[in-house]
Length: 620
Ligand code: C2O
Image 1 (cartoon, protein in one colour):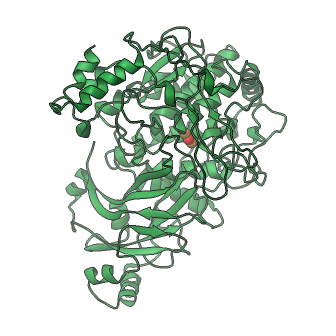
Image 2 (cartoon, protein in one colour):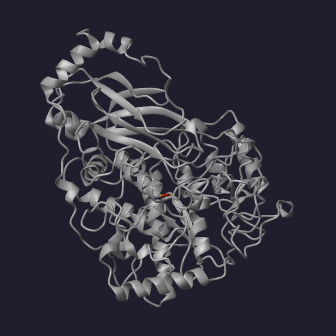
Image 3 (cartoon, rainbow, N blue to C red):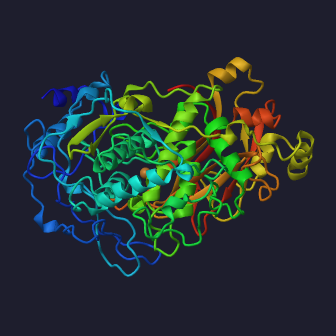
């Protein structure tokens, strides 16, 4: 019972530990099962019905019956889950708690999954469906999970850009996916089960273990975004390879950052007769339609804008791990404290661009629970994953992964190509070479393509004086349209004057600390697709896009929801953008404040913002 006693030295408020996750379990230990969580009911605003969708509405997977819930499950320690939770609850309640050992839980085993709340997420149903369940529990494992070991001596898998694959390769890939689709739907390697992984991990199907309150385990909007999706693809690729007996099989990546044939839907996904096809995509996109990496901005996409989005989200805006990866997600905390620049920028854009507007929730790619049902999803995420590798090779800034143990020890469960349940950790995902794969090199045109300022310094001064009549910064903030927080973003832009705590920063200062714009306490309904763009200027933001320096970044997310029994569907998160380079390029380094304009890009969506400030970010 080392785990329980180590908890006695904790205080909840200082709780900081890697996340063990819970997975659904039936009556034997370690297992995932067909046992559903208690159904949750809540009424949905905006004319929707009760909000539950079935992940297994697919053919032959039985719909679980909530009445069949079995209480008899054991954890790895051989204890009834209830006993364990009671024990924890008792300890939490004890007054003698101290916070002397915040890492004690690092060595704690994965506890018994939480039956009551496992694996049903409540997403918005297709129109006309009154009640259904998003049910994405993986099937049972007959044996305990094994710990992942980095492969030795396996051939290197080279992931090709999807626009340049050979016919021979394509035939192999099609055969592998065909076989994956043909597996019985309760086989963890089947396409249905692979798709459901994303549903369970992303829509609140999983809960954090061992907490008296129900806390979701979710893989978006935090520093586990990149590692989780890397592992997900790793096993998906290994399974495909094993189905065609080719250990060198490597997923193609959707090279959407490359105008040389990549910035379109790869044609391999467009053939209606191919297993790579998904009918639930935007019918307007063809393999010649330009991808919109700033999707939702209301502007015609252009290569220039797309390259600007890439530069801002990977180069200038992401000079620290916390900016690129996102905010920490620790056991006992809410999972969605803040995503990184790529996640909230081009990653979401491609999801939304691909999703089918004819579906109620823009399924498949436009919604987390269904995104994995589109084979293009895996190639999209391969390119997202590739950005992680590229980011680390850029010389400026401090682009190193976190050294924080809480991140490195975070673990996930996946089934491998032998149907074995494997426990993996973030720390084994940092180097794709060690995992056995690399990305085939192509040109990266945005790396050197620094956006240019739209306005000259002089023009800016004039505009500033006109708008605020030459009054001082503090006054300007007072008279600004939204001097009061919380601020509500509806459909018009909001400009604020934000104080800079330091001016004239030396080169050394800039190396040590990145100046960041923090937009804190961003709150919205989890069902909504949300987007707003952030500019460091107050002028003509409608004429300016990501191809200009003034564009600091975007906040954009897919609708998804919580499955909490408390029915609170609000998402509360944050956005942090690095602006050191941007201020240099705008010649604004000496200013004591900057004008920040937020441009809402989603219709009929209300976003609340608690605070906007400038801070300095060091390494985690
Ligand atoms: Cu888990 Cu692209 O999302």
